[in-house]
Amino acid sequence: MPSFAKRLVTWQKRHGRHDLPWQRTHDPYAVWVSEIMLQQTQVATVIPYYRRFLARFPDIASLAAAPVDEVLKLWSGLGYYSRARNLHRAAQAIVRDHDGHVPDDIDAVRALPGIGRSTAAAICVFAFGARYAILDGNVKRVLARSFGVRGYPGDKPVEDALWRKAESLLPKKDIAAYTQALMDLGAGVCARRQPRCAACPVSSDCVAHRKRLTARIPAPGPKKTLPRRRTLMLVLQHAGEVLLEKRPSAGVWGGLWCFPEAEPGQDVREICARRFGAHAGAARPLPVVEHGFTHFRLTIEPQRLSVARVAPRAAEPGHIWLTVEEAQAAAVPAPVRRILASL
Image (cartoon, rainbow, N blue to C red; front, side):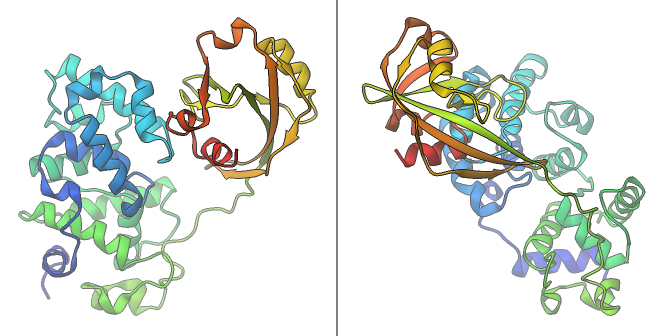
């Protein structure tokens, strides 16, 4: 039988994806941006963001020189905003330490903010034709099933075994086609549920397929009950504008613009007077918004308040009054955008 890698390369050339916008370039910057955006995000979601991002920041110098607010604005709605902040920091590091060029050394790439082992390998493969193994979530599933690697891939011994297998399978040529084949196979054929084994080029040797274990390999992670949190968001309106405040750079929605928050049960009118010097009318609740994070679920209870008087301190750095249309175009997280759309 032809080797695992050879069969994947042949399959990719016939059945894989060839029309993705980042496949039309070997520009290390464009490849890097795509790999960061594709972390934990589906291809269809990424494509329009990728095009807009490169249209505004066509090179590393323009990204490094931009205010982080502008970077976050273009990222708004894509989620996992630490990726955007790290992308910006990495661009500045590349300008400072690498003469504005993405380094072709994998250790130097890994040293950049927001880049782990698999992402660094993918950048080096697609930008420089280097011979490195990748191991994202989809590839872990492909290799675990193909070679019968049992256990949860998030456990270090299992992950280490998968890294060893990934490195042992690397072909001596066609490394980019092979790497893309692994990604395509994991995304479209070797699905987590109901894999399309009849369309898989390596199913004849796949341990999980032959032993009917695709539902058990790889093993799922330990079940966790996500904690729930509640927050009030104060939708302050005055003269056709709404008040947004900038969140701290660390933590949830770091660096984005949001409505001011309060704890459930607090007197929101008193908070308006104390924090913003604003005399507010009665609060009117807006529809509740549910939002999921990796580690918890958030229930947002928006409270709409008309503000008759605004003290100057409401416009201090960190706060801004915008029209609803301007606010929707700002660097705001998805739940805030949903609330703005309801106004």
